[in-house]
Image (cartoon, rainbow, N blue to C red; front, side, top):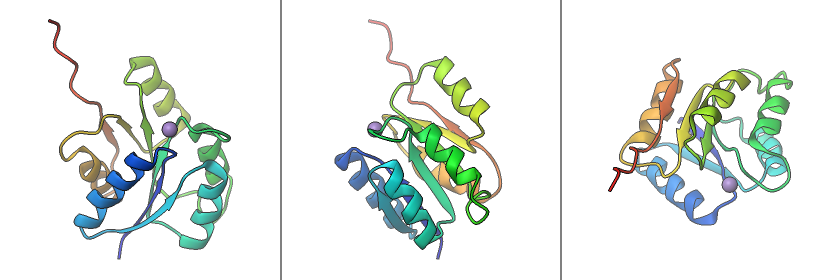
Length: 134
Ligand code: MN
């Protein structure tokens, strides 16, 4: 069974993402901070990691660096999840070596589409539609 590790410090988002992925038949492990994420990744050996960028303690960037330096986890695809959809932020995520990028709020099938894309060996990028000017 495909296992996704969701790393997210916001409890509501964590529950929402978990529900969506479980409904798609995926196995889910969770962590609420970077330190917890690294130890849970060691024990759970996920097939893909959804990694929040903005967390207290270790940032998503720091967690990715540590995952990439670990022989057992270096090749696990990691999708960045970030709250701000600024273009500069997306560039920074791509330059850092993430396998994909999701901007919150995550709408429709973006979450499951991104997970499936990286599991298939591709990249994933999704941002919510821009708010129309009034
Ligand atoms: Mn966060």
